Image (cartoon, rainbow, N blue to C red; front, side, top):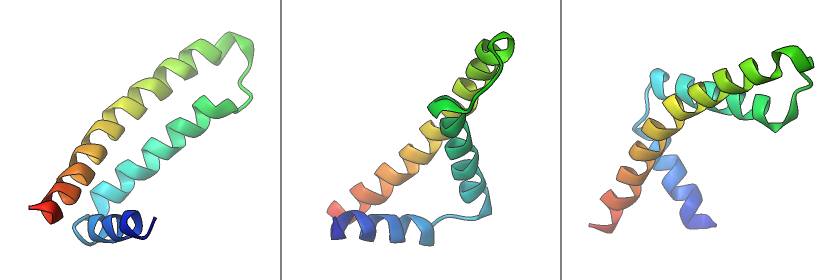
Length: 74
C-alpha cells in the first residue's frame, strides 16, 4: 500500500492542472455510472455520455500513471 501511495505522490508531482481536471471528470462520470438516480427516459443517454467521458479521461490518466510506475522500475 505504501508503494501505491508513493506512485500516486510522484504522479501528482508530474501532473498539471489539466491532469487534475481530467481526473475530476473521470470520477464524476464514474459517479453517474455508480447510481445517481436519473429518470428512466434519460438514463440511457446519461449512461452513454458518462461512458464516453470516462473512456476519454481514464485512458490518458492511466497511461501517464503507468509511465510513472515504469519510470521507477528502470
